[in-house]
Length: 135
Image 1 (cartoon, rainbow, N blue to C red):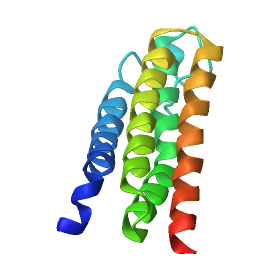
Image 2: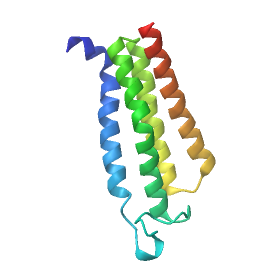
Image 3: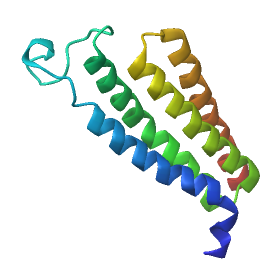
């Protein structure tokens, strides 16, 4: 396990991501009513409705889980520069926490897009680190 000690922040980020997904999942079910749900049970599209925004924040996080986990694990296993892997994984978590907060609490689309972009850049940077370490 000593080989992974240098990646403690990145591994902690993966753990925090699991917690964040679970919390967002729990929050995504509150506020639903017969009036604001589609036949499938999901909230009707309405960004003014906090129940819809909570559901979207959760689903958006779920959609980014695969790429974030894949590139972080690849970077760690391939031995990419620990400092940068830790930085990008940690910044991803902070950006996604901020995005979830903005997504649920406001209708500020530009701010959500900024935090999404920061998270996406972190995923791309981790992918580049992993590929660089592989080749």
